[in-house]
Length: 194
Image (tube, rainbow, N blue to C red; front, side, top):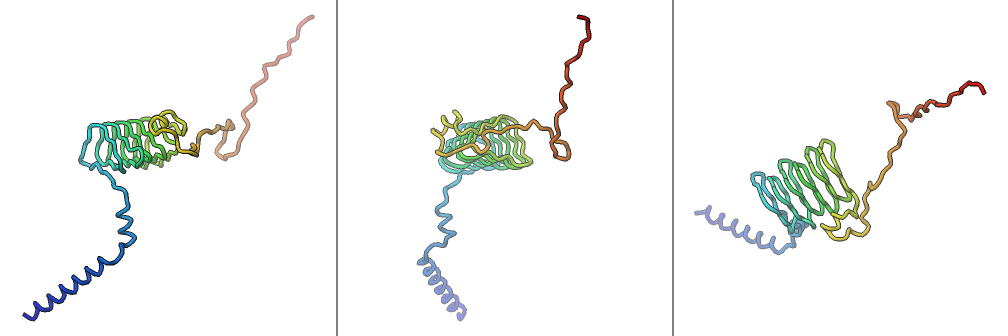
């Protein structure tokens, strides 16, 4: 009997504490969680056959056979994920396997362990050590495919490595340039009678 009264008092105290907490403003962590954009996830045991048009960030841990269109958001392909088809996104993170074209308005990052076969079209590309890539790369922000997929490119977007020159000077193990041997002259003196 004596214990019941103590239990009631603690329950009353707890309810008043909870009521007091609801009057407090949300913590920054709660605010960040409320303002985050939602993310769609295709789980590791899921296979999707068909095109996907996402209006939010998309994470693929399973298999997708078809075109993924997520033009204003990020597409992330997990290590066990596989995409057979083209992907159009604002930003792409690839850690799994892709067989198709990757087209991103902002950036493509191919992480360690990823295997990509196809063409990558983006103004900014990062290939990490340990990733595998077979195909073509186009980093021209004026690319016709980018313009067609996303409209006009973002003002000021530039390909960071749009062009480069190859130095013909050979380097040996000492990293010091050495001159190419001069070709032998083919000029000969001919003796003859005049």
